[in-house]
Image (cartoon, rainbow, N blue to C red; front, side):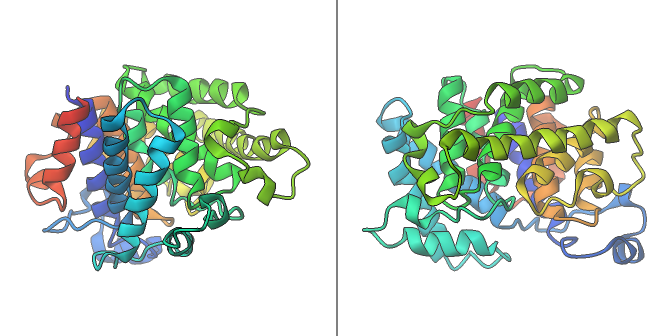
Amino acid sequence: MKRATGALLGLALGDALGFPTEFQNLAYLERTYGDWRELPLRRPAIVTDDTQMTLALARALRTALDRGPLAPLRLTGPLREEFVEWWRSPENNRAPGRTCLVACELLSRPKRLWQDASQIGSKGCGANMRVAPLGLVRELTERQVSGAAQLQSALTHGHPTALAASELTAFTVRLLTEGARPAELPALLRAHAQSRRTSYDATWLGDLVARSHDRSAEEFIARGWDDCLAVLDRLDAALAAPDPEADPCLVTGEGWIAEEALATALLCFLLFPADPVLAIRRAAFSSGDSDSLACLAGAFAGAHHGADAWPADWVEHLEYRDELLAFGARWD
């Protein structure tokens, strides 16, 4: 099925589909495009910083794994280098998030600890929209996926909710590549969040918590998992009375913040589990952070259906296609 390839292509296609609809309200989208089910993909299919940073993480992960088993120090160096290179690139002109720009500028200063660069007050979606590669590498243990997902978030978005949402997003991709049924996902993610609620992994995060105002590491990380559990309640409410024609942002949120990006993207996928193209069109045709929502919905749909889920003529015109296919082949 080539699930890794499907996830990476779906992520980028959703990103490209949502790029021109981001920051637009539904009235504008309806006037411009008509029926959301017919939302077109631009040619060429130009992506945003969501795909660019996913590829930065993928390159760092490849470098780290080529050097041995995944570990914090082995990943941190390449990850920092790739993020800074993205920040400096002239191709970084796709309306990147302020948190990433500020953090990456600080990461570019060699003597600065990454924990001091982390924007610990930000739980924007810029960290979990790029985390999918960690769900695709089969040899990683659960602890490696958890730790690396939180670490890659923490380099830019250090808020505990950004950490937790990144971990849940990576595990959503992993569960789907392992064959989990879509309808099982909300319960599986809730169980994962509850089991991790007070687990602060200092091996991966170091003393990041010292930059917060929480009384303990357990209190710090629990705030993030509680936000994620609350948005999973909203997801359950949306799925109890599903309305595919309604704006998906109405119940689970617009997706500008991490936990809402996960929940609303997951909602779009679960509304159309058998039709990946409709799932990303629904996410892109919304009142929220459309490129990130469709990016995540595409990663979930592609991990479930595999590479053949996506129209060949869409893939043909996709920016970064060759690199996405190369990583997909590596992890399939």
